[in-house]
Image (cartoon, rainbow, N blue to C red; front, top):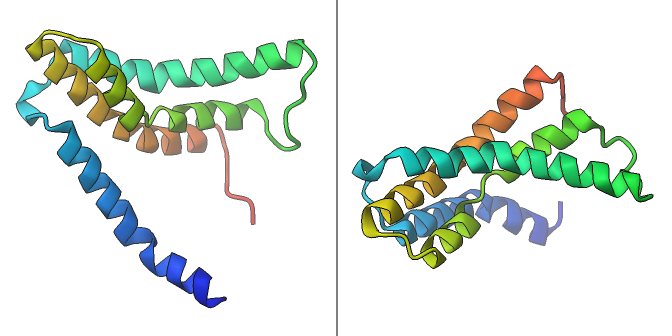
Length: 134
């Protein structure tokens, strides 16, 4: 392993923690702000993203594009769920929406909940029988 690769591997976990802290600090929302809008935002990310990824792939195939070798629809569904970790983009859209304050706080909590999409993606991948390739 080269020096640069060693440097990258060493800084991987600290960089991820700093990014997580950055996101949580910029969200600036109390955890008591959970409400119906929180769940709508979270579910739209976790359910809507896979629908968008698979749907767009189907449309692309219908007009003549091909999927990459080895990329089956089970993988696409799992990829779509993982894409539901829409924290920064979701926060941007929530900020641009001009919602009244309580709804705004609830929507920001929904964006924070999108972190759970990673765990959902792992569960979906396992349920669909996906395994890491050596």
